[in-house]
Length: 457
Ligand code: AMP
Ligand code: ZN
Image (cartoon, rainbow, N blue to C red; front, side):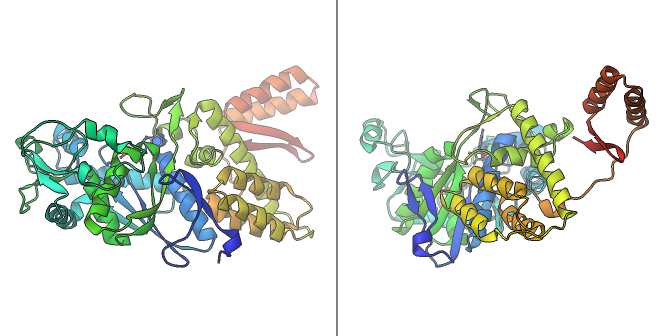
């Protein structure tokens, strides 16, 4: 277990500083992650955020904590309703389909599934109860189209996003009691309108559906308690989503909702956030169709700290793929090696652990993994065991790495034979051209004393 002088430091968006991590219950951590809105296939920007969640969770586990990780599926909101109507299928059928695709993406990326997945539509009674509490405490009021949360009643509204409350107050709008009283007041509940079709739940304050923010407050508090350790999401959720989650949860319970807020940086494409509305998205199946493995994308994400923006380009992905494949070859080699050497387990473990403790510095941890891999003076068996330990955090699945039998198409075989012939007859230029053609077909050819060796790139 962690010693006091060996504490984990986490950057907390709430204080905008790195803070020593102190869980509410010794040795245990409760994490809530905002999950996907299941109305389309997730893009690789979304998936970067789930890789970040995974690395956080795996790091905490490595450091000795027992992690309870809850993630939701936003399966009712404007977008899901619109998509189900556009496709003329029931909301539940649409969202289940995208939920399955999302979970398949997680599996493909070696992302450990959450301890508990919550669907918003399965926690409506909890949301209604929370809204009733807020109404009783006069934090919420009824307007024409729904129940709203009054931000001016909230004590520290906007602390997370560093909003100046005064500025927000100045924007107060005129209106009678049935209007939204303030521009930043947000809907806790939206009364049923004909456009919502059959998407409606009964409630004492009027039939309708929940607002997005109340969904996460109700589900996280139900499963992790009214105060819990860590809440995650990408940086765009800081305001308004997380700001509003804090306001309504703390208004209802009178307690601090979350102790540590962790936000991941964006995946960008040419300096712009990858997003559906900009139209610059790529999905995981699109990458695999182009010959990349999901783990190549995971590797790309490991190379950048979770809070920094990550610039996506195919050049970067190609580089990540090459490094990953080189690691794979080395691991396979190491598995076949048996040579006694020094035991450096302790020193490498120490630096690896230090990297994790410095706000989950995965790029630094990855460097230590690579250094360990390359250290030929380190006993081969112990080295492999340690790398497998490190991999419980990195998730490259090195235990599964083994020589793959490759079946070569006859044209590749012909190219290899022609190159051998060119080499034997000392036609070096010709041999080089043929080697290049083999490479373009996706194979690396190396000459060994036993003859040419072919590996998939
Ligand atoms: P959504 O499905 O739109 O609710 O988004 C799911 C998650 O992906 C949220 O945590 C978003 O903040 C996050 N997200 C959206 N776009 C990006 C991006 N370009 N890079 C990283 N995370 C993103
Ligand atoms: Zn959320």
